[in-house]
Every structure is written in structure tokens, then in C-alpha cells.
Image (cartoon, rainbow, N blue to C red; front, side, top):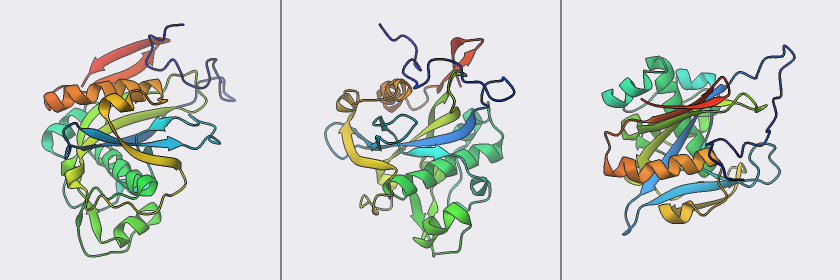
Length: 237
């Protein structure tokens, strides 16, 4: 069967209602796409999820995860650029927009050990930010661009309202990774065409195809995918 829907390969094809009979409410999540342009062709950092996960096992994804309460209060070295904040502001408050960006940076450190940050004196942090801030770094939000949004359809028992950010590898403090955290069982750089040949969730494939368009035109509006009354809706932010 041909897959025309960006979410066609989600793991659960039939509705899984909550005890109230309503679909699961999507949770805010954020992803960071890191682009390395030191070679002739751009490459992107991706990781493969462990086969034992009950959500997208064995799939190749960008580093990212759910927003945490601590992301609303985490310090940062630079703020989101005004144009990025404005586009995020079409679906989120300024505070939530920053928290989403901070979640993407934090999850990237937790999953692949890379710091999208600027050097700073080590400082104490709360909860999931403790280890990040102990590295002597503060998040560099000005390095992030907002490239896409996708909301998991209501048929899934796990739903996310995910924002996809992109940043150049040159803004990393170092390309040397910390030890893997265990979330991903393999991490590697792939040229964009090579990455499309991996075992990908369909929404990841959709965003990968957006990357060269974004690199060619940084002012391009961000696509936003969601479902309304069971039908896919695509708008641009």
C-alpha cells in the first residue's frame, strides 16, 4: 500500500481511547536537527532507538524528547532570534517557546552528549539540567531555527506535539560526544540523501526532505502537520 500520510507508519493504527473515551492529549516535545557542513555535502546527526522501546523501536530519529517543567526556568546564554520566536509564537507563548527550545538542547546533550551552548562557569542546576550546567555551558538558543511542527494523530496511545529545531554543528562547543546515555543504540552522521535510506518514522522522513529547502531558503515558513477530524492538515507558520 502506498503511504500518502506523513503519519502512516505510527505503531498503533486503531484508536486507543483513555478511560474517559477521549484520545490521549499530546505532550509537548522538541527535537534538534544538527547540520554539519564541513564536507562537500551537508550531513545530519541521527540516532537509532533501541529495539526494546515500545514507541518507534529500531527507528532512526533526531535527538529530542518531552518538555520538562525545569525547561521553563533553565538559564541560557542567548535568546531565540526574534523571527524564530515570532513563528513559534503562532502556536505557543514566548515562555513555552523558549522551554521547547531548551528541551531540544537538553535532550540533545542527554541522548548524544553534545552541547549546543556557549562556555560559561559551571553552576548548580535543578533536575535534568544539573549535569548540563555542570559542564560549564549555557544553551545557545540564538543558534536554533524553527523548521517544522508535527502533532501525533489521535489514534496513537502516545501523542506528542513536536517542534523541530535545526542548528549548525559549528555552534556546538565540541564535536566530541559524552558517553551514550542508552536511549539510542547507535549514533552517526549521514549525508541527507543517505539518511533518507534509513528506517525512519514517516514524520522524520518528511522533516528530512524539508532540510535542503530550509538550507536553500532560511526564510522559508515552517510546515505544521496535524489531524483535524481524522484528516491530515498541513499549514505553514
